[in-house]
Length: 183
Image 1 (cartoon, one colour):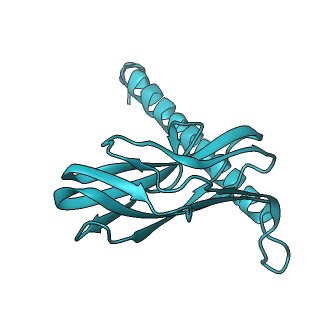
Image 2 (spheres, rainbow, N blue to C red):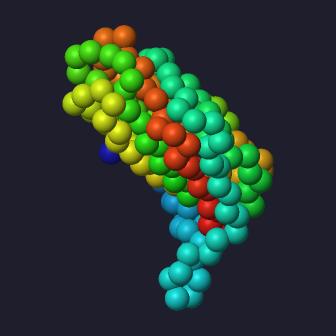
Image 3 (cartoon, rainbow, N blue to C red):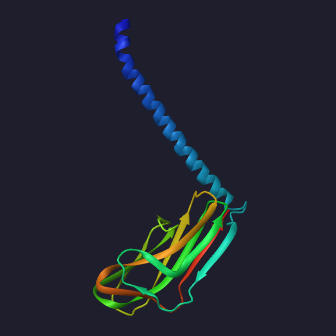
């Protein structure tokens, strides 16, 4: 092999080496993020595997039968928890008994939990209804991981998914939202 052949291959070799370095940097960054998440989860349990609770907050309803016809997510009245977190792990549970007070055709509603109004925590919960006035309880759980310590507001939101001129109503004052800080 001649020196000129090696010189021609140098740019290709340099690109290959840089790509390999970038791949290793990305993998290292991903592993560090994963390791931080594991460390936080390990702080959330004691040596026997029991969960450690730091903060327990409960939002309970005082107004009866609020409702919405919105097809985009809107806040559920009184399902809001402001909290200051230190650990970076929050478990949020929410139960909302709802029914359709109006609407025709296929009826469905969904709820979700958000942090600071925009960041969805966990999946949404959807319920299809077969008739008006049948109460179904929607339950949702969200685990908010790896958030920096600070002050946040968690809210439950709801929306109508299916139906012609539908209105969903939360039954009585039985809705609740619970936040537990782990770690």
